[in-house]
Structures are given as C-alpha cells and as structure tokens.
Amino acid sequence: MKGVHLHPSGLRIHVAGPWPFITRRSYLLAGRRIVWQARQHRKGLARTARALENAPVPFWQTQGYNWWTGALFALGSLLFLAGSLLSLLPAGAGLAATPINIVFFSGSIPFTLAGYLQHFQAANQSAFTVDPKDAAAPRHISLIGWHPHSAGWLSTFCQFVGTVAFNFNTFDPLVVGAGWVTQDLAVWLPGMIGSVLFLVSGYLAFVETAHRYWSWRPRQLDWQIVFINLLGCVAFMAASTLAYVPSGGEAWWITEVATILLGLGALGFFLGAALMMRESAAAAKG
Image 1 (cartoon, rainbow, N blue to C red):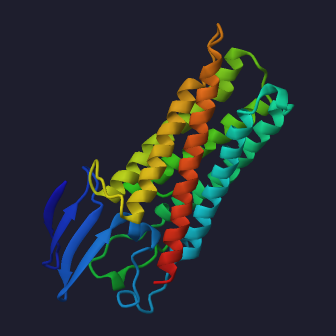
Image 2 (image 1 turned 30 degrees about the vertical axis):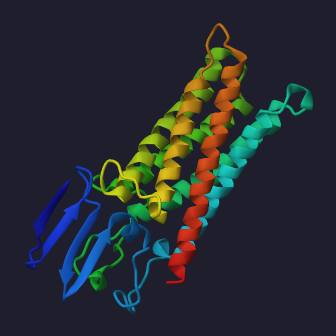
C-alpha cells in the first residue's frame, strides 16, 4: 500500500506498508526529511539527540530493555537447541527423557518472559506525531493494549500467546502418560497452536520491517533479524506438524527429522536474538 496523506497541518505524508498496515511515513518538516518506521518507533530505535533532545524516554523504549529482551530470547533458544541435540543422542547414551523434557520446559520460560516484554513494548507504543519532539509516552500503562491496526502489536501478541502454548507443550510431557491420544491432546496440540501463532507473528514482523509483503534486503540489520526469525518459525511449524503421534505408530525417521527441524528453528531464533542484542547495543551508542 502506497499513497500520500494530507496531514491537518498541510504536510504531504508519503505512506507505505502492506495493506491494511501503514509501516512507513516520509515527509519534509522544516526543510528536513523525516522517515518514520513502525518497528523503529515501537522499539525506540529511531531516537536521535537532535530530534528528541531532553525528551523523556519510557523504560520500555530504552536500549537496555531491548537488549535484555533479546538476551532472554537467546537463552530460551539455547535451551531448546540443547534439548534438541540431547534428543538426538543414541538410545544407549543412557539419558532419560525426563531430564531432556526439563531442558525444553526451562527454555520455554525465558521465551515467555521475552515474548511478554516485547508485547508490553508494543502495547504502550506512542501514537504517531508529525514532529518527533512531540512524541510522548501513554498516560496510562497498558498490560496488553489494543492496537489492531498495528502489525507490530498483532505480531507481538501472537508471539506471546504462542509462547504460553509452548509452556503447556513442554510441561505436559513431564506429567501426562505415553498414550497417543494423551500425547496428541496434551503435547502436540499446544505445540501446533504455538507454532501457528509463531508463524503468523514472524510474518507480521517481517512485513512490518519490509513495508510490503515480501522484500530482499540482506544487508540491513533489521531485515536480517525478522527474516532469520521467520525462518525459525517455519522450521518450528514443520517440526510441530511431524510431531503428531498416530495411533498405529510411525517410521522412526519422522521423529528424528522433527527433532532436527526443532533444533534448526531454535538456532534461527538464537541468531535473531543475537542480532537484536547487537542492534540494541549499536543504537545505545547513538
């Protein structure tokens, strides 16, 4: 979606984004070109000393907040990757299933914390203002918010709910039986729900950054982050699909492939989180 909006002040604002979202605005203000991008605005990455001199910055838009969010995602990803690698060990290695399941469940906790921190940020994003100096934090802090016209808010909401589903997916193997019906209802179903939500979240984050349904900008850091995360979401989705337990048994290699895909998805999330931390550190240096 591209077009020109006439602001009440008389400014001509060029807008872009995948319908129905506006993810980029560009206009001239006092002879200076202003480029507003939804992701940078939401995360506080576009702030400059000249544009926002002496402007208060809410804690959820500080680069320390962004860095720690990335660090929690990285920790959760590493634990999921470790669980996947342990699951691929030969049966004779002597490692029981319960310790491996504990590793997976432990990984789901920092995932959920990071998912909520990211959504809290989106829930309290400030409204667009023509002059960046007029940007202000919301008067009331919102725990969930309601911004259905924001691709970032929808993305982080889906991701957070997906992480909660993975909490059930990883905890239930510790307490439920081994029957195929129980496994599918208590373990596979929450994992599938979480994977679908992650995939939706990953694509919404991608289009928010790309400003269209598809783009190829591998030299740009923000694009690298959302693209690698999207690949991780695809791998998680494939792993969850293969993890379904049929009543009549299945070929041995299906479980192995599902575990490998799960590990690749975790690796993708880890790389994306590491790049988020790098992005935050670079923004903090100004």
